[in-house]
Length: 402
Ligand code: CS2
Ligand code: MG
View 1 (cartoon, rainbow, N blue to C red):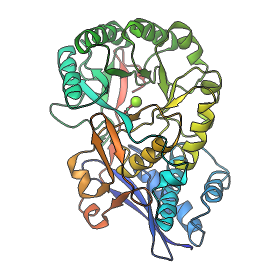
View 2 (cartoon, protein in one colour):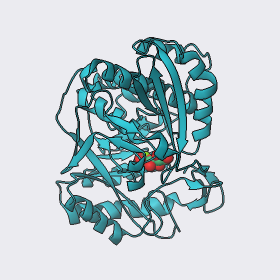
View 3 (tube, rainbow, N blue to C red):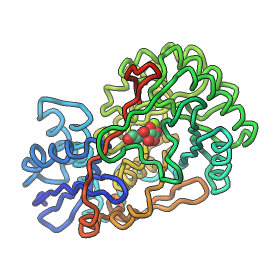
């Protein structure tokens, strides 16, 4: 079997997605997600200009060799754009292999280690009271794990809280929106939010929180120490994590579990964090971190250090990446939890995926390959419109992390 054709589709059913479709000379096709929120055209061009011409004629079963060809073979390795492209190719090749052999991908990577996937949802509120109500609503709809993000008193709008009644999509059409931030106000407020949530919701529900890269290490240490009595499932992205050693200071102050890595794109971003057991969950998405092949290597490395997975699953990863993550979640032993932000209804006009939600868990189907389809004709009804993630500034105007 040979790769005969590969095509990139950039569409926007509610938000932008980049989808790679690889077709073989035996008429099989595989799908990969190449969506990088706010940088969609960069990945699409990288695939079209530098990857697809070299893919034609290759044996799609040689997944590891093709992965190495696009990682080592291009000299300029790593980085979000490069690895998103490699991720899409890798997902598509696993999809083809599963379809060719008539089995779901999880049966190619070790088979089922579990029958259902624990997920967490996103509860957001403009105020503490609204956030508590939202967490209750998510618990009532069956979630056993809920991430809580809230507006911060004294800050106009903040990460994770949608505009009135809109679904939460952080990238807005056009140039970056500028938001204002105060870590001081945030640190004074969040412990009260989670004390209130734990009192209101009891000990059973897993509560999670995303600090979204905004603290310094000592600020993050203060946060996780004050949150410790509320037994969170995790605090995510406590600091911008280019400096992995930062987590030594955070770890020294608290037993609150730590998750990191949705902006990572190779195992090398994790070497100190995992080998020194500075974190508890890895977030690097299958869609940005080199696909299924690399996710399996990262999960195996993490498993030797008691670190579990908690893959990124925001709406800016398409249903293709979601399905790829669910196959890895199903097969690996050190699975922790899967982020699950349901896509807007309109996305289902373009993508159909073989999984279902039932009382806090996702159940993956047994379709051959990844179990996801892409309707090219429907996609053409939703043309790409450039969108940008916000830029964040402190109260004095200093540019900071969003
Ligand atoms: C967030 C993401 O889901 C999360 O944990 O950090 O929503 C993130 O803000 C977006 O993926 C950025 O595109
Ligand atoms: Mg996050």
